[in-house]
Image (cartoon, rainbow, N blue to C red; front, side):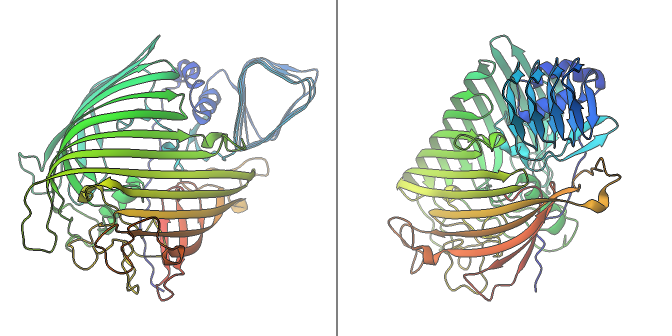
Length: 569
């Protein structure tokens, strides 16, 4: 059995905030996500904290906020503040009264008649993985940071509601074209009674050699956003940039792609240069839904793989970064995001994640000739392209999930798609039983649609891709990590709550014209019998998961062993 270890594990423990700031942030956090609100209440100095079971009798009154870790919780009396239950079931008996919010994470609520709750009741079925730093509870990432729409500046989601950084330094995803891109510059966020203002102005320094005073080493990314409405409302934003971005990035998380590059000398993405501007007008419904109308103009350029350092196999050559089409395009798009996964127990509205993009591009391009020695002349190009990522999370019980994902993307009309907008499939995160963009014993290339043999770097040439994923999760406890019968020892990245995972994937790509037998399908979706399928099993410990995946469609494919940081999807 050939083992293909895709990713290596690297974690970072969250920085410790000054305790005196926590109480001031509780009021703001209560309007945010369930996890943010619950953690803020738990860490507040005035909160009564209980580890293990809690029972409040009918004749008892507890003043202030109460936070319970690893319950269960039975309330028959009164709590004047909020009740937070983390990884605990809550039972509210007849006559129970809670003065403010009831927040339950990783458990259920049983509510009798005559119960009074003065504030909002929020229940998140997903167990919270965490570590303890003294008396402070620090939630693990566990892949949930991408579960909520947020201002997507580097580190922005980790900052308090109001801040000013006159000089801020951050890094982005390590890759074979830029090395480690370092961002430096000022940023600030200012909340107001009517909304919020956010501004950041970063210069970009790319560390891959050779470093020169040119666009290969230097870039910029400047953004500004004005939000009207504290929770719901309109957003108006603008951006000017000179960046190097991936052609497609939906298969793996940024941290997974970066670690695979830095440690294993494997880059699972292709890149191109973007220089231009864009403006956006949108609306938001809290943290669960957003709709944006985006328009801008960009100049595209091809970039080459350089020589960034890697821990292993540093002397080997990188996979060639495929050449891209070059030119200037005006772009207009509509972007929809819906995320209700924190309400997974709601039968209709909860447990959904939806990301949909519709893009129209128009301009002039010089298309890359690929393996042909004939240079192409500039041509006018107008195209439309769509992308849909729809996921459904079903919580059957506190420890059992059945989750589904459907992904569709590609050409919708107009001229042939530029190389920057084409797709591929196969490998980690996209039909796991096969190698990256490759089926070694498959005579038909349904993963790159012709880019494996003839184009440098296994270029992505598919006009359309489709993929479906199904997984079943069952949580379990690691009893040998328990320090006593009443509590659990939690470790960052590897803790006593894990989940067994069984999964199946099916997917392929195709061309709408000039693709050859088995690759070209001008109309509709190819027959389901032509999709490549895999099955697998693994164990997810929160911040890291280990999986075995085996191809079914091509029986001779070797089994893959895959390491993921966080959830598969």
